[in-house]
Length: 181
Image (cartoon, rainbow, N blue to C red; front, side, top):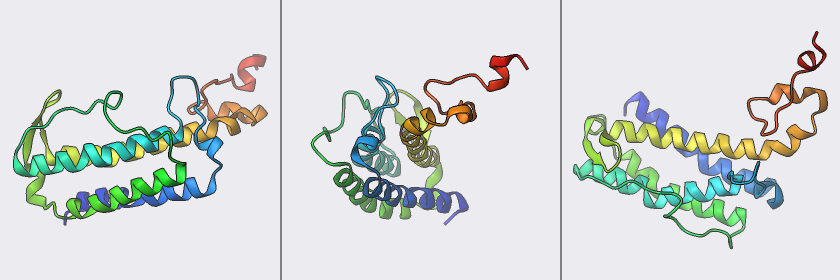
């Protein structure tokens, strides 16, 4: 296995346990809290990850291995409704789907990475690009979820709040910016 395949597999292996820990530990109201209207809560991110674990990654990996083109995925129009599931149950569902997909990833060889297929919106893509996207996508939505989780804590930091400007949905100026010093 190549180093990049090992790295991607390692990233993907950490996501489900991370979510299971978050949903087993944090209160549901924190997990379902949106940072701002129209933005995703942590659970919304988890629902999306669960959808793509079923409808996107295995479909696309198999298509690329077979040299078959595949359609785009619209997360706003496709996917399942998870609103009746508890966050812990949703994390378990995600973990089950991820566990089913890791052997597929493990079957990819270095020679497979150059395989190509056409994505309906992006054009010609390689399996290597897709696998990089899979790992980056996991990490991106984990960061997005953690940003949502941070908001009530950031709001309570007082004078330290400006240190969180990169993550704060309602940033405030640093003390020296408001005093002119």
